[in-house]
Length: 154
View (cartoon, rainbow, N blue to C red):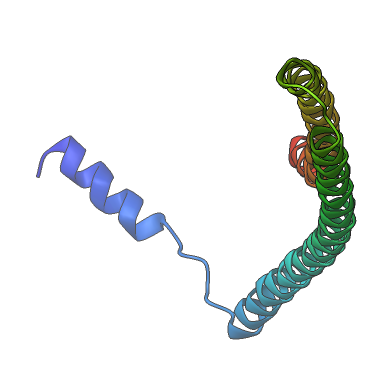
């Protein structure tokens, strides 16, 4: 045999493999299993906490949306009422007109006021819807930012 082959066989003969101790293996498996159970419990707790936070955010968002919807409905009814009153008032003025020139003047004034009224109502609705979008999206935005912050920490 060559020297390399002799050294290899000597090394194999002299090398002792550690004896397999089943009690140590059981302890190691138990430790790994306990660690996995603990990690699973932590993950479940985080999931439950996240689900509860999400539920709170959704509830808040839906309550805000309901409130904003009511506010928009009231604003719409008020605008429709104001428009109807202006139309009836104009109709009464037209009925009382004594000449075509007076009808023309009343109509011109009415249309000018209606345009101004429409522009003002549009501004009010725009302001209200902008506020509504901000109010409704705020809880979701805050929750999203908190989740991102928590992810960065973890």
